[in-house]
Amino acid sequence: MGKNLADVEYKMRMTQDLKDKIVESAKEHNRSMNADIVARLEESFTKSFTESVDFAKGFLNSYLQIRATTYYSSMIDLKEQYEKEPSTELLYEITKYEILFNEMMKLAQREEELRLQKFDNSYSADEFEKITKQAFAQFHQIKKSDES
Image 1 (cartoon, rainbow, N blue to C red):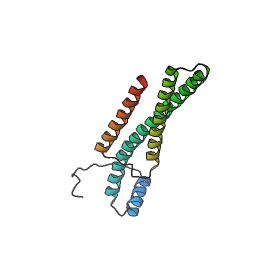
Image 2 (tube, one colour):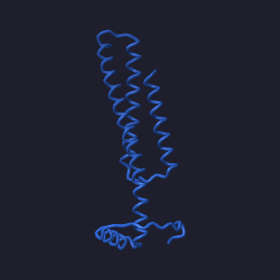
Image 3 (cartoon, rainbow, N blue to C red):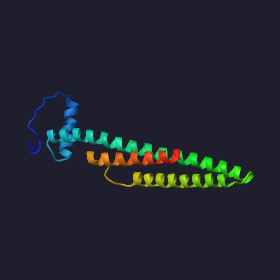
């Protein structure tokens, strides 16, 4: 057993078919059956963690796109009103929605580019916490700008 593993034993039952699959996998990866089972268990926890990060990123990107669409729609409506009856208030509102729309699109594009990058998606707990805090900070910043 490796130096980093505690000497904890756990007996388990499995079908012969499953054991054969583990033996084959262990041979393919040049490791013992025990090492293969441990590696697969650890991977299952990392995968779940990574899926949570991917879900959060997808949620943020969807939110950004929805907000951008809302701002664009408002901007078009205001421009139509401005053509009928120009005013400085309408011009101010149009400018505000153009800025919000452009910023949302930039953020959505940035998030999409990051999502498409080919990189290792396994995050440590510290990295996940940092990413989550950044996402929530962006979300609250966007929400604040919506309210003003």
